[in-house]
Image 1 (cartoon, helix red, strand yellow):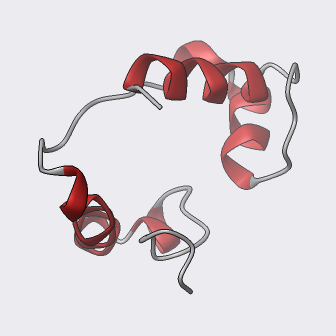
Image 2 (cartoon, rainbow, N blue to C red):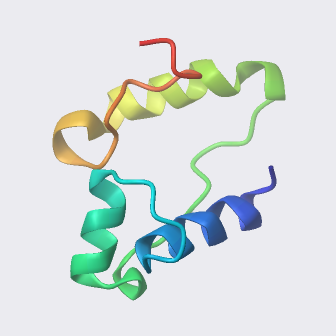
Length: 77
């Protein structure tokens, strides 16, 4: 999936159009999707995506101070 499609999927869920239930989408619905942004933190090889996702989630401690519900890395928790 490309980044544009991924962000659009988040926006749709935040608007209640496609509604998997999680804390990010509840926050988007409550605070407005316009108050959320999407940015690339790092570019890497596809083979490193899971490792880098885990790194950035840990770096920003987003399971505590953000909206990540897992520590990342292809649902291996």
